[in-house]
Image (cartoon, rainbow, N blue to C red; front, side):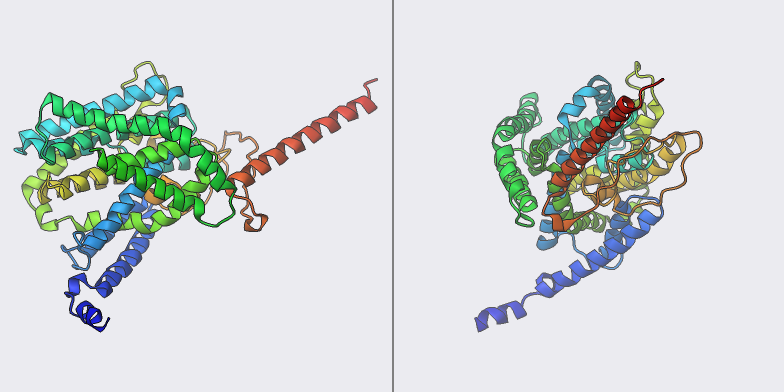
Length: 479
């Protein structure tokens, strides 16, 4: 025992437990402070957390090493939680309602940025595989940022809002498949039609099989867990399920993130999805900022000072913005606000970061292209909220279904700060909003059970009022 303690004392400082604690303290404080400042400036928290990583990383303070095994493991968990949350947020049945329009937006929003990014990168002298990663990173759309901004504008439930969410999810699914193909190529697979087709079949086949089997086997298990009153059980079991599918996806030759995303898709239709989202979000508030900060720490500011890296970054920004805005005009038959759809598809946010980070960790891209991709992610994420605020007509928010702080992917990416509600909009008539559901931990009910109870109480109250009105008419007939 004494010898083991001496060995710990003799460990190199960079691998000591106290060093890890110091890095975590700096990470937590910096990401919370700068994330909060970003929200106060009307920007997503992810921008502040990225900046925190840049400051803590080797380019400035040197307090955070993203290649440290413990930090890298925490960041990987953060990635899995993010993809799990995106899956939980994805309503496959809802996608069918906006299917043709959302599919057209998604296809154009993948094809133009991917092709544009690849050919621009190749024209600037970048090799094939790094150019593929650059193109794949441009296909992404941040579901979390788009959902939060549209919710703040009262347009989340509008036709445009639903099209944006559907197309963003389809973008990410297609992008994940592309990323799996690129990861397979980097891992040694030959670039042939057969090899690319096989990797694509494995990625899509895993999701399909997981959905078919999971939709049958998993709901009864979570129904039983939802009835238990053991605090924290539901969220932890759900997270274990996501990790299990991620492990199985990796074993099947696909990407870890494909498995985590599939786990969220499976749990979305279950009645316990809101409880799972809330529980997993609480854990995500620790691990997800570590991922964003580690991505920022990996940015080499000296590489960004290179004129070629800035040229590549600027070209990718232009292609990324133009390609997504053009996607909004893809469904020519849609008569709504197509410019708003296109602008809402612009932010790359957390998904673009995942693509870039995977490219860096697999060795597919170097520090210069990674920095250029970070520049693209930052600019596209930064400009979207103010642009949407200018071009989208703010609607009256009658029932808020996506409040900050209620859990989900938007809380992890955009933050939980609630904006003060302004006065009612002139010329807009608002209908009676459903009352807020107050938290009452003492009643022994889960949030989903409490919501169902309140809905039943409102229906009973309405029926009672109708009965009173009917009785009044009978007692006082018209003369």
